[in-house]
Every structure is written in structure tokens, then in C-alpha cells.
Image 1 (tube, rainbow, N blue to C red):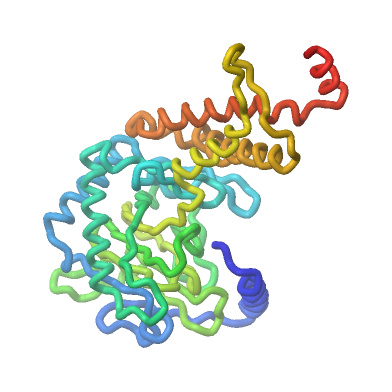
Image 2: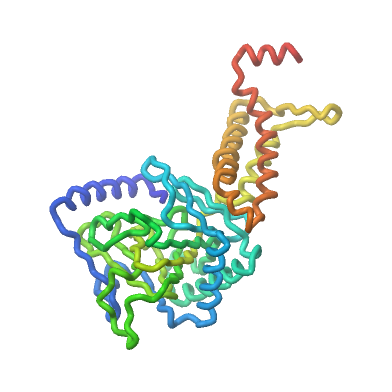
Length: 384
């Protein structure tokens, strides 16, 4: 997340205080086992909304769950290589990104390229489920305070996740509350529009509920969502058990002020996470416009076809080189290293990336002379 400098400093101070205090105290934990919800839900977790599976149409459950299973069977869900604490590690979760054509989502120094939801019938089912989630979010939202946008948010990316705890050798223990094994550690979701909601659909085998609806004491076997106020050692943490087909929403600034984790159950689990990604620099349209800016400084001789720079001003040359680096390191390398794995079942990005590589090669001819040694530049001029 991108915090303002003052807020980032405050969070750093809270983190230091919390880490020192954790040595000598036990952090309280409340488990949200309905009914009724714990009192901390309204006081400290008011941005969390649970929508039980019974409130969604049975037909919708069937379509979505069949689509998720099909995507996994076809090998569409893959593990990512990400950067965590200066180390390159593979995620324990297999995933794929769906979204509007040309959108990407960046997390932990890795860019995911959205598959178009119109490529496969299964992905179309996911798009329908996303629209249903948006409608529910709008219905669940409280009255909008003055000064905030009243337009309902439009989810633009959906991150599909799958994890089977039985296939994982080492899952870390939750360190603060003793919640159990973590499939995903404590974190904020990255690169989202401020104050935007996150909607999650959870699908797994039902464990923990008796036939008459009574809660089974074997809570540790269930998948749960853990939440806590970020670097706060006094507010009790919250563990929310999930049934297959439940939806939960993180609204308003909950993703900013709180952290959440995913606590592993005994069964494999899918989740469909709908987000409003901050895509001002993460769409194909954006990077194509950047290429156009740089290539505007490249002239072409109408007779010989030779290329030449229109301007040699330092600021102009630096601008072109910045764009050249952005195309290479933020897009081409990211795509050819991991993104192109998805081309066998979603080929939407193949053509645009080839064109992007063509523009990058043209920019190479523009910035190449800038990196020559002085004697090389003199030799090039004398040859002309």
C-alpha cells in the first residue's frame, strides 16, 4: 500500500511498539462463531460484512463452483514467483487473474495479466458471479457520508485462488493469537482504489456444521479469515469461520486500517476475490500511450527509411529512456517470465505484447547511443 509519509511513519512506530510488547503479553482473540457475533464486530470491525451462502441462489453456486473446478482441472491456476522480504519465493496459493481486457494487477513485485472473461465459457460464469457480487455490495453498503463518492464501485479484476493444505509441507503458525496454520499471512491487499471494497466468494467442502445447524467444536478444521487492527496489541483479533459458498466484504477503509490473513482448514478451498484495482499505470492503453510519447521523438527519413532523433535535449532523452525502461522491466520481462504461461488457454495478450516488443526495439535505437563511450560517439559521427 502507498501511505502518505506521515501515516507511514506512524505505522512504523506502531509496529515497533507492538513487536516489543508482544514479548511479554498475550494478545486477546475473539472467534466469530454465530450466533451471536462478538461485540468487537461492531466496535472494531464494522467494515466487515458476512453474507451467508444461503442468501445466494443455488443455481449461482452451482455455476460458479463448476467453473472454478473446471479452471483448476484445465491447469489454469498457477503459482507465482513473488518478492517477500528481499527473497524470491513461490506462493503457496495457485491463482489466475480475470478482468477487463488490457488490465493488470501488481502485487509483491509481480504483475499479473488479466485473462479476458470472454475467452472461455467458464470465465463468463465468473463474470456473472462478479456482477452478482457488485449488486450485493451495493445493497449492503450503508448511507454514504457527505464528501464521498456516491457512485457504486465497479470491480475491474477478479483474483481466483486455490489451495490444498494437504499438498503443502510447511505452513506457518499464526504468530500473535495462536489461530493455527496460515495459508496466507497477515497483509493488506495492495494497489487498490482508496476506500474501495473487496468482495470474496469462498468455496470448499463443508466441515464443522451439524445437520441441525449447531456449531461443531472442531473449529480448527474449518477455513477462517483472521482480522486485526494493524499493529494494535490491545484490540482483540477476529477469526471468522466460513462455510462453503459464504461471501464476505471488506468495506470502506478496513483494508487500510486492518490486516487480514487466511487460516487453513483441512479441505481444499477456492476463493474468488473481487477488487477495484488502481490501474492508472496498469493497463495496456496506458503503456501504449507511453510508447507513443517516446516514439514521437523518433524521426524517419522518407527516402532512406533511416531513423533519427528529433530532439537531443537532455530532458527529452531522459524521458524516452524512462519509458524504455518501464516497458522492458514492468511489462515485457514480467510477461515473458510468468504472464505468457497463460497463453495456452487465454491468448488475448499475445498480439499486444508482440506490438509492445516492437515498440521497445524501436526505442532501443533511440537510447542505444546514449550509453556509448565518448570515443564510440565520435567514431559514429565521423563515419557519417
